[in-house]
Image (cartoon, rainbow, N blue to C red; front, side):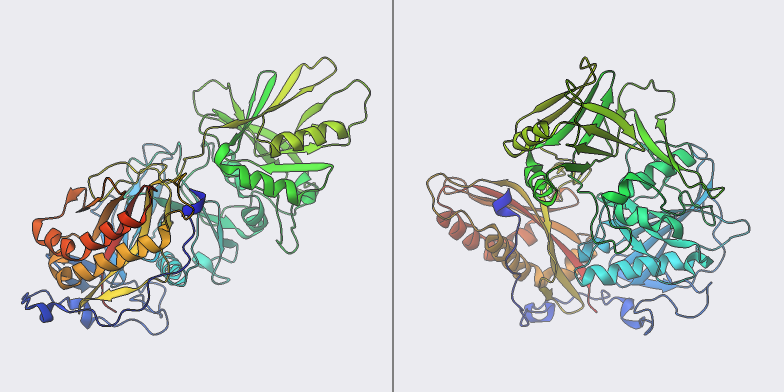
Length: 567
């Protein structure tokens, strides 16, 4: 898909879209009462700037009609979820819940709804309640609003990224340094109110832990798992806890990352995992991450090669780097955590370093565990052979020990498809796990009066370059033309779509000279005939023209659109 994954431009500005009145649509009672709610000029949202206990309004929606009201009473344990509005298109679902199924803590569960409109994964915050706390902390609403505003400008957060605290008093403490974002894996989510996938979970980070959150987050995540005895890490954030790391001190990561200016870190290859088993360590590298491996080779010196790894779902345990924090001795040591009540067979590691300075006669390699990773020492000629094998995408084995008692194997594996997990098609509910997609930023909003329609994402279900064509199909231009035609077709019908709760919809197009067509749907079902007729008027000519120009380069694209409130 490498030729398909870059958009060269976005749709041009379009200011003359027709409104419902232009088409004679008289829809009574559908003017949203949100028009009467003004944004706070300081927060640029419905969140009041003044007062720590001043929360955004509660929102209710019925058949397209939106009403707002202030929260009238404290939130009690396990009462129905409450939906707060941060602006006309961004909401936060809040629930107070006792997680007696797993960690036995009473928590606030915050789930965003609307970040996807600006190309950002939805966010979940799970925060332990403080004693006598009856209202959800206002700071979490402010953070979600900040993520929305940043994403609207094209700056988003993703898995294993970090956002620093917006002030020196995050959640009423100077010790809170910001949030680290992760995906769920083995954690229990049974009682949580979760958004539709894909979503991220935010973990509250102590300010002393900030360097690790920035440069080597997998170490911090697993250390949190060891602290709370929860594999691989808990989803619950605990306020005012002691730091898990303090002064950086002497660590092997010092030579692989820049702790002063955060200008570089050890290269991480998406999907690369390290499996340590009895007498063999295997480093699995996905074939579709070859470019990242070559980049790491080009940026390393001749004698040292390092790779950061990912959490492996195939491992039942993982190395953890611990640091003494109670005295002046800040040395590091190694532990391991594992899945509860499961035997330890495969242990994961967080990094591997190959050092080409071994000069012991008759020794082909020497491996050892260092902190939460693996150090492999080899002769210089072996390092050259290893680098050549990686560039040629060949597997490579290193015998370690005087009699090769242990083997380190680098092997290329199937493509990494661990993305868009849990996402389902709006058209027919088809799973889109592992289907590549591109978020669309700074596209054109098409106005229909009180509402707009926005193209936010395209899934590339199929994209093949023809062997007989000198010019492959231009996915960027094709997507833009389909998006423009779809928006023009649906602009007169936005109020009807919103009233029918069809606010997230998709158009799937098949482009091939011998097979051309499209489907459209919302909530996993096909759109009713009224909308399909309008789409026919705009889309049929576009997809047929694209099929004629495809020159046997087939493509199947699914474009996602969202209907939003104006303003």
